Amino acid sequence: MSYLVLARKYRSRDFEALVGQEHVVKALTNALTQQRLHHAYLFTGTRGVGKTSVSRILAKALNCTGPDGTGGITAHPCGVCDACRDIDSGRFVDYVELDAASNRGVEEISQLLDQAVYKPVLGRFKVYLIDEVHMLSNTAFNAMLKTLEEPPEYLKFVLATTDPQKVPPTVLSRCLQFNLRPMAPQTVQEHLSTVLAAEKIQAEPGALRLLARGARGSMRDALSLTDQAIAFGAGSLTEAGVRQMLGAVDRSHAVRLVEALAAGQGAEVIAAVDGLRGLGLSATGTLEEMAALLQQMAVLQAVPDALDESDPDAPTAARLAGLLAPDETQFLYSIVLHGRAELGLAPDEYSGLVMVLLRMLAFRPAGAGTSPQHAASPAVTKPVAAPMMSKPVVAPARPAVVAPAPVARASAPTSSEPPPWVDVPYEDEAPAVPVAVREPEPARPPVATFTPTPLGDRWAQVVAQMSEAASISALVRELAMQSQCLSIDEAAQPPVWCLRVERETLRAPAQRDKLQAALSDLLLHAVQVEVEAGVASDTPAQRATAERTRRQNEAEQIIHNDPLVQALMQQFKTARIVPGSVKPH
Image 1 (spheres, rainbow, N blue to C red):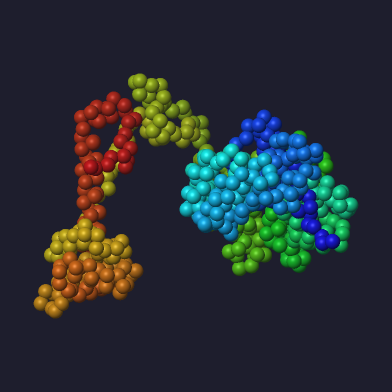
Image 2 (image 1 turned 180 degrees about the vertical axis):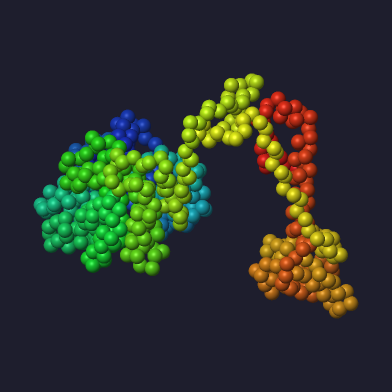
């Protein structure tokens, strides 16, 4: 007899055996008990969380006839009647499973819907399961919309997908949607323990924890990894064997690194990485183990009572939690997460790991590393945690003030507090003049200037005409806007237009040829464009900038000269016009 893998052997056969999806089980059980049956269901969730299993259980619940053949719709299918056995074995004629990943066209969907007009052959209902429904084409979705909205009373649709965002809203609105959640590691570990007990296989708790974490929320992945671990361990599951199989890093290495980081010992950090290299352990696995440890430490720092006494790693995490301040733990956790994404960019993964760990030392707050209760001196500057920046951002310390005098703050007649747009200084940053004194208005930017040339007006008009005609692309238009027309030789055949352009990227021959073709089309005769390098002093872009600046200054001056604005500024001494808020028409 061939071996049946654990993921298939222990697939849930009824709602009671379904693990980790209590919210879905409760809703479907109540609906079946009260006979409030919808015609279309959509099950979403990551791989291996039970979407297909729920669909088969629902199909059995709808078609179960009971052990004596007289049963009806039930939330507890018997599992022994012909309908239940045939659905479990995949040969029930009225239960159809369609893989949309390989049958995504309108022809396959139309063929399936053509069979919907016929009543069930053996069962009470026809049940169509369309797996990975998001893979269907748009025409296939459109073909099934009408039948999905008003199917025959004997037809039930069950749709399953790992990516509901790709399902059209017109389909979503016709279905009851249930989101199957990823399994918690504790749930997976408990289920694995039950399965292995039924298989009479000895397993260490540490091995089950590693398998549960490696499954990443998928029960099918957990059972597949367990199959692999049984084969790897020749019928037994040990923590050392599972760790070696998964390539997982022992918690002791992560503990050593966190201790070295807490003490600020760079030499110990490098020695720990060299030890990992010598053992051939994964840098990615090291950062994953550090992230898990730091997360556990952060939880214990925030909620000391959250210590799980059944977890053998909890005492170590509690001890390390006392070596770091909570903000430092959060900071190290953030760098670990960013560092995992950067390992692929490093010359090799170990050098990337070294840089991630050294970054933790380089960005640590000054004075850290003694104890979490250690308070930094107010005069010490403290780097701001910025893991994505190349340099630490340092918050400047305020200068000490000897016997600061209280500052009288001016207030508007209608309020005891200054308006929210006024930057009120701290009391230890007393200004040299009273706050009530109005600051002079900032000088407006000068009007951008350019040096007019004899051909500047003509070239600007030509460029404007080409832009209006939409005869040039964005890059060619940029070339024309940044060019200064030096000369036009009308006597040459064809006429030669000589332009000066400063940016080297715009002087590419391909862009020059496109500008030459556009200019020839505009002038209705062939021309030749020559481009030379140099600083341009009269370009259409410079003229446009000068015009915008002139209009902006003019608009701001109109606002400043407005009598109402001047009256308000006289009444409210701290009022000012917000720079950049004035926009010309």
